[in-house]
Length: 235
Image 1 (spheres, rainbow, N blue to C red):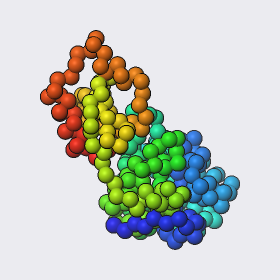
Image 2: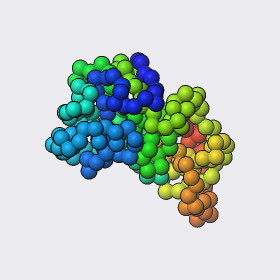
Image 3: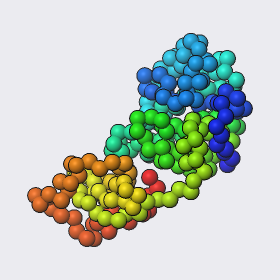
Image 4: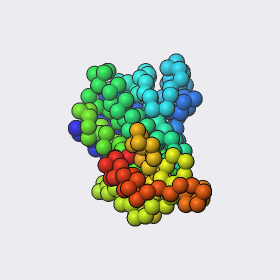
């Protein structure tokens, strides 16, 4: 494991490959470093990218780097934030796992990448950075993260602390909602066969119906079970 985080221009960084975040429609996601790669590669780069075909969210592919100063260019379709209800955090973990596995398969030893999803449709930046560093610690690659802002650089240097549950709000459909001590909320899947936990960065009024008297209340034992799942699950 070896990673660094820098504010240097992505094109000035030395690595075997660079990562370009793309949407499923094969357009560059909105991050300064991604735009830098896209503009530097020009039309020839995008012709090569389009030849890769459809790229599902969470998956990665390799394409020709062209005139870019890297041996290869890796494409990654990272997730946008959909209210924390679509396993976005898990998908981002999978993005990095798939990315690093592909790099290893290609015989690469190093790669440079911005923080995937960190500038993408309200994705929580602290979670995007945390997930990136967690996965980088579990790979043999040398990973260089090109931070696209001072905020992302500062987040990469901060100590991450998992927020603690302070109160149970109620339940809605398949999820129980808890308030956290950082002012945010978290949903925990009620289904015993699932261990799905995801933060909710803003409160949605519909969750208040979790206390609707027409619904059967959750037992104290069930609430404690769900709290334990939260404590044991690294979202």
